[in-house]
Length: 399
Image (cartoon, rainbow, N blue to C red; front, side, top):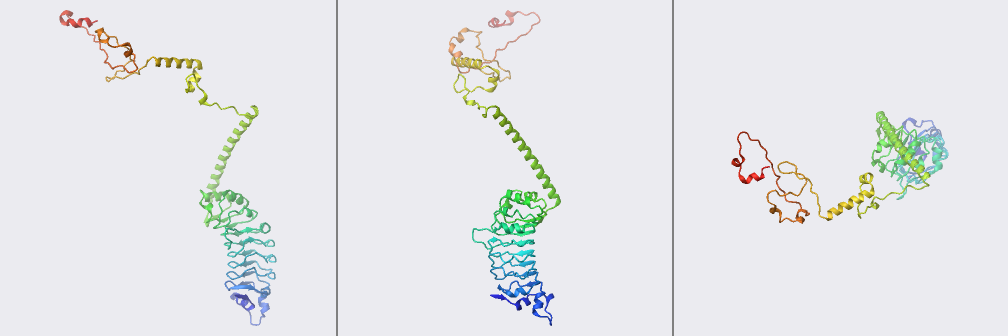
């Protein structure tokens, strides 16, 4: 483990700020503005840092620090890099009123607090904290309110966050990074983005909501000033097209709501006139006639009185019990359409039908098919004698 010393500080400067030969160490440390102390295995920062009164940028990332060092003598500090250490709590920053960028990613911070005096903070990096299993990064409302008027960039990637509603007060944000979290609520996102009017860059990759239908289109509509989403530029043509699409969608939604509202108004008016009750619903199955289980068709109900309809059904049932059955018209093989079946009277010999009873003629089965009788008419010229030219047994059938 390494403790920060004056010698280590002197070696942590750039080539542009070398110590002069006749310059004292105190004067040299006082005029330093940048210190590069990253990846030095430093686990403790002593009082020697207080000698760097004009320090504005301090790089202390990739070390072994367990807490934020005391920097109350470095009031001109504007950028502080403390990522990838073992810091578990945000504290000791109340004297850094000029701080604009704070890097605390890759530590073990569970609650974002202690930022009440950083009223000029513009960038805050809190990505990939080593959190206990099942826990997520929390935010102190007092700290968020203190930096809400100045913060423009926030990085909270990889912190198991499932909601960003607590961050809606950060209305000056222009760049928001929340990669690899558990964000899944598009409605909440729309509400928060409606408060972040200046948001131009957004990164949400690795969240469940990225798999929702039309995710990119919906986010572009939510954040109206967005220029870059998930590292991809948004063209003005795409923004205008999605804007028109959303406006048309909202118009259709308003029309549907208006139709529903009118329907509800009508029902409310009807309830007021009817004393609060809707009319009873008639059950079609309960509407029966004299024949059990029969439901009268609507067209007959409208055109024929109920009493006449019942009488007609009764007569039809009586005829069916007597054995009467109507046969439909039958088309003969020759193409001629036969008429309805009638009882054919015998013309040759009445004895041919003596064996046919009245019951057989009117039986329920269909009668046998018979070929139609044909009649022939002709005219004869010249001397014609019927007795000579026509057989005697056919003269009786000639009419």
